[in-house]
Each structure stands twice: as structure tokens, then as C-alpha cells.
Image (cartoon, rainbow, N blue to C red; front, side, top):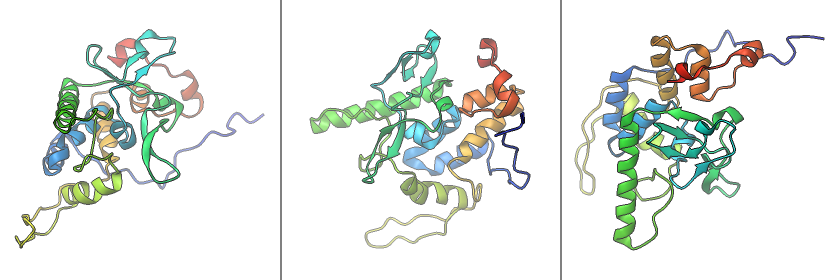
Length: 239
């Protein structure tokens, strides 16, 4: 019997992911313009891209033995957001279309305490979505986040049009016929990926001396080895 069987060890050659502090997030969010609220919500929850852009306001999580884990996906009264176990992420289907699907792992279907500004931003998004639906005289969509033309959001498009210029900077572009042009941007956090918002959230929690087990649960990570079996998070630690 090998007690270390299937236990994965940390990769010593793995470099630390690029991340930033709250001031850096604020600067990147400001440059992301229409989606500054999305950047703040990613950082404020530590959610993955697919979890956040897959957020819907019509789903209810049920079936958990702990009643606090059950309820609407957007639960301002309880101060939490919930990831649905089967429809909690935006995934790409075999035909290339986007739709709801399960999160990355079983532990990813979690309940996340969220700051008040996250709920304010989500509610503002929903109000704009519903107002546009009334203007067009159609039923409102169930997803919270949409692209500039109303479609569901792909990370590749967001990355190209908003995220990379915000983090890496961009050259000035003069105004021409048919284009508004834009000023030069100096680099802010060169090379940081959208996923870097999760690492930035983790850094904030570590600086606040939050236990590792609570951080992993908050981010939806499965802990490996013995610590994964015997580490538990007390309710007061979650708060």
C-alpha cells in the first residue's frame, strides 16, 4: 500500500501567476470601460470567467443538506452568490455555440459570500438588460452579462478588445474617418490574464490571514492529499 498514490506534488518550476492589488484592479477596470463592473465582480468574488459570465438570475440551487447552500443563484438577502451544479457556467457546445453547463469541478459548485458592490453592479446590469428587452418588446434574457451587441460573452473577444490593451497598454491611434481614435496607454500589469483576477483575490485573502482551507473553498479548489480530507472550514471562518 502506497499512501502517496495519486497525490500530486506542487510543480517546483511553476511560476507565480501575474496578479495585482486593489489599486491595480481599479486602473484595469477603468480602462475596460463598458465592462469595468465585470472586472470588479470577478475580483470581488474570485470566480472564474466562465462562472461569472454564465451567471443567470433564473436558477435556484437545491438538494444540499446544508440549507444555507440552497437558494437563488443571486441572493442579496443572504449576501451570497451560488454556482449551480449543472448550469453554473458558460460553456461552448460541440457546434461552437455558448450555453449553460456544469462548472469545472464538483467543488466549483459553491456558495460565495460577496461584497455589497458586487450585488449593486449585478442589479444594475439586470436592470439595463430588462430595460432593453422592454424597448425591443421581447422577453428578457436570463444571463446577467452580455457583449456590446447583446450576445453572450466570449473570453477571446473580451481579451482582445478590452483586457489586453488595459493591462499591456496600447499605442495612440489618431482620429480618422470612421474611427474615433484613442490616446496612448502605458502598461499597467503586463501579461496578466483575466484569470489573474482570481490570483489577485487570493492575495487579498492571504494578506488578511484567512486560513488556506477557507481560501481554497472560497475559490472552488479541491485540496490534495491528507489536507484535502481533514481540512474543514468553520462557519465563523467563512464569514
